[in-house]
Image (cartoon, rainbow, N blue to C red; front, top):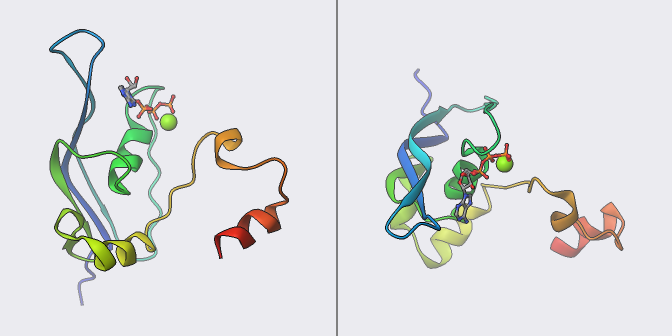
Length: 116
Ligand SMILES: Nc1ncnc2c1ncn2[C@@H]1O[C@H](COP(=O)(O)OP(=O)(O)OP(=O)(O)O)[C@@H](O)[C@H]1O
Ligand SMILES: [Mg+2]
């Protein structure tokens, strides 16, 4: 039996308007990834090459300029409302900067408890 990918990223592009008028920053340009059940994928690259933007686009925190993200074969851009909320439970993003992600006045237990 051939397993299907849990996550499939197809030719994803994310562009930001540049400070220079009419120009764009091509933060993510034509990225395709397949993640199969049980797999762990690491993404390595120099600072500013687009790793965080790719992750943010996959979870929907940035809007893709082109391409698709499929979770269990479902194109996330076709979902809305409850279906989108349910699919988001399966995608978790751990933010890079601990000071903007974690409240240093809470214990780890309190921070996790708050979400529940
Ligand atoms: N909201 C934004 N508006 C404009 N440009 C952005 C925005 N977010 C990221 N960029 C630009 O997109 C490019 C990719 O940035 P990104 O943060 O994804 O890189 P990175 O690979 O995660 O870098 P690092 O290893 O330093 O975390 C950079 O040129 C960055 O300046
Ligand atoms: Mg980053």
